[in-house]
Length: 147
Image (tube, rainbow, N blue to C red; front, top):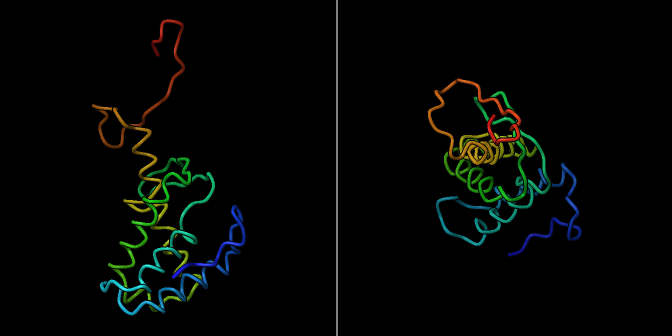
């Protein structure tokens, strides 16, 4: 089963088409807990509709600082969206196309396992001894390399 959402190599489908195809793919899938061609197709549709295609900024839930997310984080987004679908399958099936898309996009980008959180962790990688809630300030380096 293949998806035919994309019009060309770099064309993103219209928002209403993305929402409708996502909703239809979930509707066509009998149970998310069963390995079926329809579930595999749903994964493809999630990748094409929910995941980031270009650089953008998002604020992870619980944070106040936006971070840049790129298509490099699409795998985090797909896993986060599908995990939410598995956990909330009954509720997800009651949502209309626009609300389903909005819920999955929010979880995929801003959720605890989404792309914004992954990007934030990448930015803070290697920092130690910073108590939770304390601000981190970036300062320019002087000529000797000290801040």
